[in-house]
Length: 128
Image 1 (tube, rainbow, N blue to C red):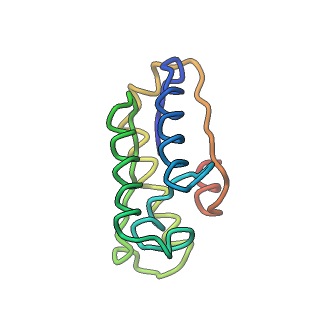
Image 2 (image 1 turned 45 degrees about the horizontal axis):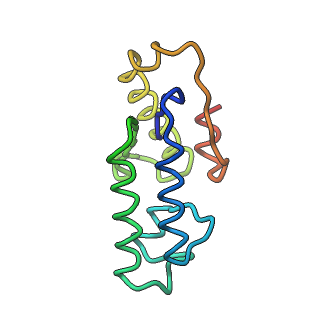
């Protein structure tokens, strides 16, 4: 989850990244790191060097921005029951823990907007 104070303008950074990615043959493209690392989806025919360049571009883009993030991680092996419900429950708890840890950050704002593309059913349920 990317946390961004929208009073800080990052549009020029976004435009520069989009221009660079488009010049590499990915017009109007959102970089998804999972498929990029695993050489899946639109990246399945890309050379390692191409995928590495995209990853590095994204890395340098985010390094320059005034953003925070939450990256919940769960160990599926810790789930006694191997089901979507068990994983979702564990993920929900981890996200809640990390959101609580950033309470001071969130309380500095009068309004919080959540942008989400609803691509993952379980995450949509958690965010609701």
